[in-house]
Length: 195
Image (tube, rainbow, N blue to C red; front, side, top):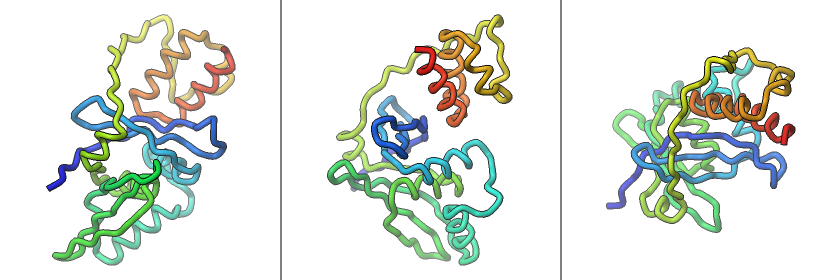
């Protein structure tokens, strides 16, 4: 039987080479391999909204699907990335309804957006991770210096432009560590403007 490896969302990064796309960075929960999935802007926004505990005034498509599952007494209990063909990942939604398990094919971006809403685990087949996974040395997170204390929850783009490159890079590490990906994108943009 093929084994599945549990994943976590590490980052959501704007892709500067293909307009309107983002890199969804996923890494294994028990290890240091990671890989990126190219996703569209609507799916990236949907994932970022939920991860930042923000709500859209009206239900987005992924909210609607989750609501429909609830209406039919069904529950998304896991997402599995099961294949990759020509650099395109294939995923399945594993849905439980009464005593039946239903498996539905889905785009990986939609599957992840539903997973974060349902708070269900995301897995990848081990043989796929063997192909796409890149080992990453995780740097030691340095203690934040008292002289650069900044409230990253209320910082504006003007504030970011006024900070030094070193402070911006430190803030970027903090934003990623705290999983504040939209803020991380703003900080990254400010860093690029400084450079």
